[in-house]
Length: 294
Image (tube, rainbow, N blue to C red; front, side, top):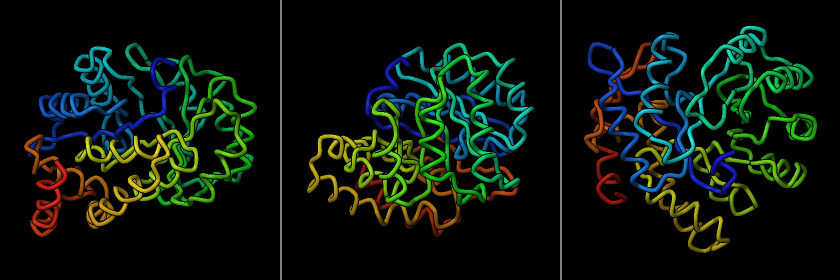
């Protein structure tokens, strides 16, 4: 699966908007180049942080095209595709053009709140049709359901094309359980910045990060230290980032990381309703960290 099998730091990339609400593709290109030039190992297009739920199908295709055009195969690209209608999602995967993308990231069904057997059957249905490797995405704080260690490991053993999970449960014990019980080649990426370095120290494969979108070199350094099992220095970086991560989520995601991106001159911090722009207070609070860590 291209270089995605390498333990690494990925970023869930924001979708920048003009003040009129349209997608700012020039800013998106700047962000893609900024992250790749800063050493980020792979990029996720239209995950949760990309506000995918408020984009039309046409806009999504245009965003995917910008990623492919600007990346020029320099790093692996992951396409965010999720939904709570398994049948519809299966049909989407059958017809989508995945040229230029190396994997899919697909979130657990939200709102329906399926039980563990439902989650298993959902992912096995996706496994049966995906033409490229697929990563599961467990984020119970957003979906209302937690995919357990047992279910994750069951899918890891039974699926042919599901190669890993982004675990954003924030539960370090759950992440450690997946690492310990899943096949050795099954990728376990943290999806929770605050516990990403500790989970990587326990044997995880890295992170799909939000904070890395605004502080790529510094946060990647922490993940690299954890991958090298340099516990003392990795934990130091983790502690250094704790106040930054708290600020990033103070007004919701991706408001915080869009504020950082505006401070970096990459884009304007516009969001689509029902999400709203970060306050001047948050921008002021983040500015010292932007200056220090970049």
